[in-house]
Length: 276
Image (cartoon, rainbow, N blue to C red; front, side):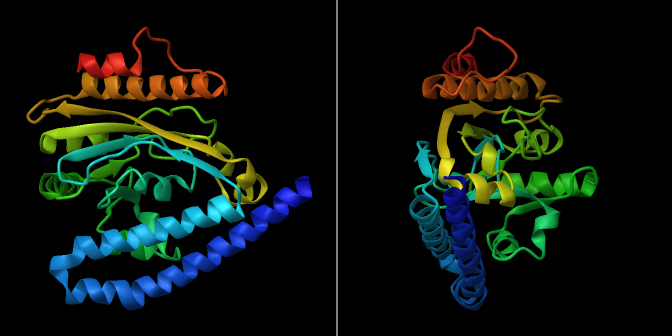
């Protein structure tokens, strides 16, 4: 059985690699020129392209890799929507895109992914994702982030943990970028929680465990927030984090996967949203 699982995982990884390289070539030779020729149709073209990529990626994961995906959130694609999401694996990004039935989010990503990664690097540039270098963000960089938040006509997606989790739990949040975004404009906030991908966090794990993936995605929101001008967003950010921890615990309890070891609270995720 183990050999069969690894064979399936290895085959799926090979197919995904071929898909990434082929899609990267098409993206550079076809999609990017189309966007350049028809700038007024940019969002429509890129929305169609990300839908094609998502369907192909999910097809490989579900049919070749035998993974199961249960993606429930439906999030509007418009400016002023801020999505905060936990981070478990390399598959989080294509999966969260399925939460947007039209359009796509602009994701906050580390600059190291901006070069040398087939498909990913070019997509980060083509889709106008927000590149940051944690720990080296100066005043000018923060002002640029704020301006991006104010003017974006698409949703913004941020992983406030900053890195993938090592144990499936919610890591401490990094506040710098999130505080800048919250100060920039009124927001409709969605807390998106993903679970079931911890064991495919890295490529070797993907090969060994893709057949065991039972991914579930849920959300809490919308949560309306106008924090412009506030010196601190501590209370609101802590509430969002508690909502995320509670939702993860609820999902695991419902699935029988066990309860996450998180700080205890009498509030459910729904109660926390009402309190905002």
